Image 1: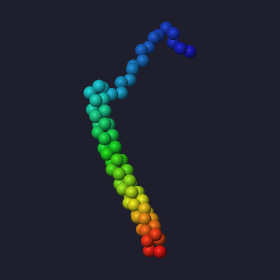
Image 2 (image 1 turned 135 degrees about the vertical axis):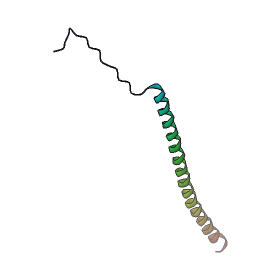
Image 3 (image 1 turned 90 degrees about the vertical axis):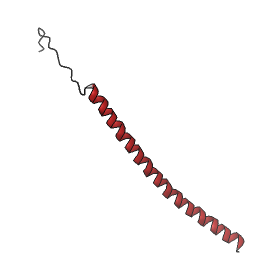
Image 4 (image 1 turned 180 degrees about the horizontal axis):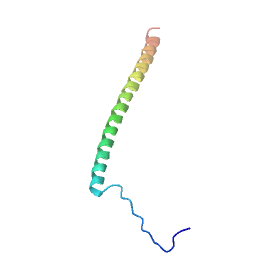
Length: 72
């Protein structure tokens, strides 16, 4: 049963005060920028590896084609 005669006020929880909120958002933005930078560097290195592998493949194909056309 609910107490109908008493109206109790429930406190509203406040998670973070506004100045702390601004500092928290700044920290999160800084961490996000660092993560994006590192992720970009990793993807760039992966792209360089793939480009190197494809370059070797195309170089071998052109060399083989040149050998077959001009030396046979």
